[in-house]
Image 1: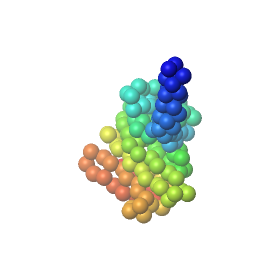
Image 2: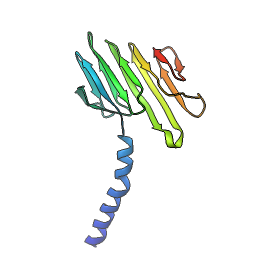
Image 3: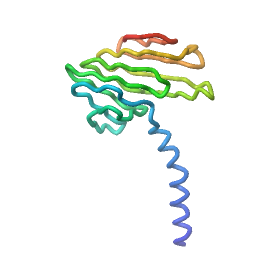
Length: 145
């Protein structure tokens, strides 16, 4: 009986660990952090951002007054977060071998500049920036929202 229970526990760990790893995949890192910038994970835990710190899907980046951050994403796109800004990385998928490039960034308040280096067709591959007032689709440009 104990052996069966141990087998179930091990099997559960093997099945659910990859799903948890996918949910927490790294999608970028901080290249520049000036002032008070924090990173809030999907559980709501906030930590100070630091150069080299990893950013994951669903993370929220918060730049306080007189603060800013620059992120380099897995697809080499750059995100510049301006002072007094909060953004959430709702979705960041980049798998060029499968032609999967889909991004949704939610600017909760403030300003964000994005330098997009890839071409997005707007149909199968998308780069969307959502703000309280609008949603913009980008196809490869230097973009300020």
